[in-house]
Every structure is written in C-alpha cells, then in structure tokens.
Image (cartoon, rainbow, N blue to C red):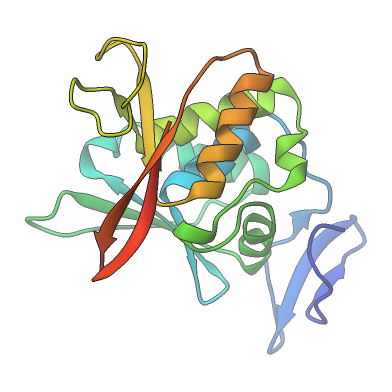
Length: 212
C-alpha cells in the first residue's frame, strides 16, 4: 500500500509487483519488503548519496575511493533485496566521482515515497521513524558513511558544543527536516547529539544548511 495507485502496476501470480509499459514488463519486485539491515542501509545511502531521474533511474554519486567498499555493498544490497543484477558504473578521467546507476521504476517509486526525491526535500517517512532498531542503526550508519565526517576544531556546526573537536562524528546536509528527525531518532536510541543551522549560498541562492 506504500506506492500510490498507478495503472501500469499490477501483481503477478507470485504476489510480486510488476510494471508494464509499451508491452514491456519490468523485473518483478516482492510486494512486501522487510525492514531489515540491508534495506536500512539502502535507505541511508539513498538519503545521503542517492537521486532519482526520469522516474526510473536510481543513481548514487560516490567518490572513486569508495568503488571497492560502498559501491560493492550497494550492488550486493540491490541483488539481495530486489534480485537486480544489472547496473551501470560511470567514471570519468580527471574526476574523483563515480556514479552507480540502477534502473527500476518500482524501486524508484518505493524510495521516493519513503525518503523523498530531491536533496533539500528528502525526509524520513513515519515507517522509517517507527522501524525496528536494527533497521535504524543501519540506516543511520550508511547515512553517516555517505555524508559524515570527524568534527574539526573550527566546525561551524559545533558552536556551543561541550565536546572537544575530533571526538564527534558529524554530518552536514542542506535539509532541516532530515537533521531534526535524525536528532530525535538518535535520542530515541539513547544516543546524545546536538545540531545547528547556518545560512549558505549555493547556486546563487541562500539556503539553510544543518549539521548534527
């Protein structure tokens, strides 16, 4: 019931969701997904590094040094959860980034509903907020692996902090909602944290960036 009604979606005889368009049928996806460690990691990586384009292209923008770690892990996760084995890795010379891409309209619909679509508009669906501890631990760990860092002495988000630099794991995002919800998720798990916001200029537009 998570995915909104779509005339191109249907169930096959194995209770799997399929997407049909122009006489072409997608790879079937299980109708019920477990909120387990693997799915938690996928949501965390999507929140930090993922994007959706065209409604069917799921991409993760990572650093080349993560090719043997996070890239491999994401490929394994997509295979274990959805049975997807086809993917595309885009690398360019003189560029430190690497883009890992998957194609599935159904998976894009699921992640968009659970986490949002654009960086500044992503969120934690109530399903994620109320998930079991194992799921949330893995979601948070991959979120921090994607956008986290060790706090520095001049960290602009640590103003008023009682903790010494280089002793905290921090994360910064251009998304107030994610930062505030992350604070409450951590608190609910018994992890003390603090957060703050500053105004930054990006693409000639002032936005509020947050750190926790």
